[in-house]
Each structure stands twice: as C-alpha cells, then as structure tokens.
Length: 362
Image (cartoon, rainbow, N blue to C red):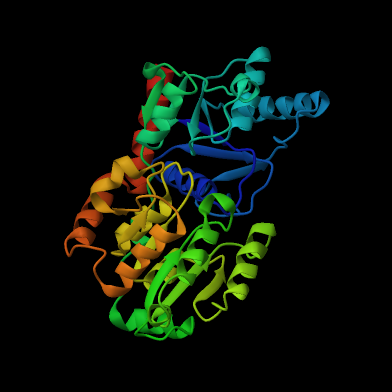
C-alpha cells in the first residue's frame, strides 16, 4: 500500500513521535510511506526508507492553499498514493479542499480531546472517510461533541517501540542518577512531556511547595521538554520564588529511557490528553504512574493511580505517598507492563491502523 501521512507541523511532541514511529513501522511492514508537513523537527525521512517532503500546510491564504494543493496532487499522482492519513485538523482541511478538485480517500486521527469546538472550528473540522480515536475519551468527544457517526469512528490505541524501553538495572539507574547529579536515596518523580499550560507543571511546583520540608529534602523532580517560552519562564519563576531549585531539574529534550530509567514514578497532571505515550513508555520500563483522569485514562485505569483532581493540594498528597512508598500496590507494575505488551506496541498500533485503511479502501 502507498500511504501519505500529513500534519500541519512535525514538532518534538507526542504527535510528532507518533508519526515518526508509525511511518517507520509501516515501512517495516511492507508499505511505501511519504510524510508531508510544513516542518520536520524530528528529521523524519533520514532513516527507515521513509520519504519526507516539505509542503506548506499552515496558510489559509487562497493563493498559498492552491499552490500547496497542486503540490500535494503531484505527490499523490507521482507516487500512486492509495490513502492519506491526516494527523492535524489543518491537514484534514487541506484534504477536504483537495477533494473539490481531485478525489482520494483520507482518514483523520484525533490526538487530543477536547479541542476547540465552537461553530467555526466545527465547520472547519473534517474527518474524511474514517475518524480514528486513540482513546475512549477521544471517541466519546468525536461522537458526542463533534457529532461523528459511530460507524465512522475506529479505535486504535497509541503504541511505542518497546524494544528501546527495557527496564534499567540497578547499576544503570545509579549511573543515570550520577549523570543528572541526583542523590541516589532521593525519590525521583518525572514530568516527561512538553513544558506548556496543558501539561500543568505549575501545579506541581505549587504542590511541592506545600509539602513538609522533611519530605522536600528527599525529593527530586525531573522535567523534560524544550526550555523556552513564556510558560517555561513562569514555571522557572515560581521555582525561584519558592526556593525549590534543588528539587527541580530541567533536562531539555532527552531520550525516554534515560529520564524514566532514573525515575521512581511518572506523574501526569495534564488538563487534557489524547492517549499519552509517556504513560505507555513508563509501563514498558516498569515505572509506576499517577495521572489525571483525561484522555487515555479509561483505557488504562486498572494500571495507574488517578489524581482525584489536579489541584496542588491533591497532587501534593500523591507526591507524599510516592515519597513514603504507599502510592502503588506491589503488582501494579507487572499488570501495567502486561497491558502495554498486549495492546500498545508500535507493531500492534500499525497493524490496527492498516486495518482502518483497508476498511476505507474496500
């Protein structure tokens, strides 16, 4: 099958990683893949025989849109593309416009719920021949809010390359903590995501500030993500205000195995999600998870601990439990790892995605 994957941009985000892993696994499973986007921060196309072509998909200017549509048509015709898979609302809008002039079947994966859904946003939201939901919550949003018919919704849980996510040994953990200058006896909790308002890092800083001082001394919190932007500055300012610089360590863009390998727990206090990859990565690595009840929770609720809400007081309670060793039952890690192996490998995700393509192309 000849497949075109599209997104508005490819950034260092969960969606970007998803597209990279999906495109590479599609090739391994015998398909031809071209990835199209306005940017390519993950350098898709430099390995695994995936081809990347830059096409401007951010503009709504009619002249720019027509130019991009003509470029897309040349790519689709020259490469005998069978189906287009959109990973951003803007990409799906371009394919909707494309079908005014030419015809090709396309599907759209919604990676986050809720998304803006006022009249204008709903008007410019198109799902082609099938909408792919990456979690129960996303599917409920598609059907209940965006009014997509149930028969046009398919469910494909996100997956990751588990071969790169084996649990670390004690000696590896020691080396990683030395690398990050962490006292080995500290309890290490990780926030592994973008640094932005939706990921809610500010609430974690507020939570740590209300912990007893003797607990704070035993705690290190690792934060990944690009160290720039106004939200990052706000988080940094709050850490400085509360004099918590010894607790929080910003690691920048880091490999997952390194940051999770140094960790005792992953917390996800997000305000919204689709199906967070960091939780699946943690499951494969044997790192327990406490997370908010947003997208992906219903599919994994038997394998994680939930924040009752994402206020600093509640987050502080759970952090204290992690420090004290009372947050997780002893079988949680094993159950979570079994769930991930059975449902969330990149191979399973890709095979399930291809089944959606075949369904559309019948």
